[in-house]
Length: 245
Image (cartoon, rainbow, N blue to C red):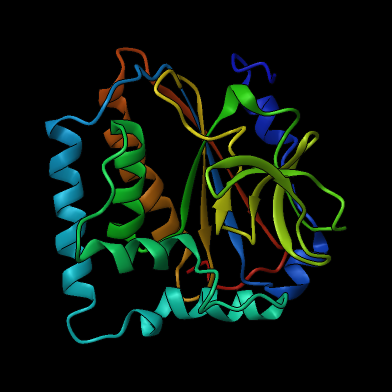
């Protein structure tokens, strides 16, 4: 379990392997560690934010098919680059946009907030229980040996990523498969989560400024989830990553 009183130290150990940047030099990841959250179920505030996100999705898709939304299309290309089929395993942003018309999921207010921010700002955004990490997060191309705990047909199971698949992992195994497709059960948010790691993913045409604005909006909503909420962030990018302006 990481020392959540020192989030800067935890984030300092995070990294993206150069083999991932070789696939997409424009990739950036903004990590946001948030502490002091008071866990609770969905409420009127998270409901209002989800409705705002559903309206934003309706507007975004009014004249544009979901697979042609610029950031969705960029992620589809990224998935193809490591051999995934985006029509079968959709990035988290596309999955939420496709669900928005029928209603985004209502889970708990923490999950509701980050799902809504993902849709409103059109960035893939994952939220995980930082207490359940074993070592810092790292984005790598899998060897195929890493364990990934999940549920298959209602039964807890352990899978392994494909060789070369882009995965987030820690010292205990995979925390998210296929970049931003499916999270592991071990680090998923729960009703008692108080310290969270959020991962915001960006490819061109999303700029660093737009990515930072999404994080700002996320934190602005999270400060209402506890009397002493604090946050720390770190941007991971290739040394010559495009798209900053």
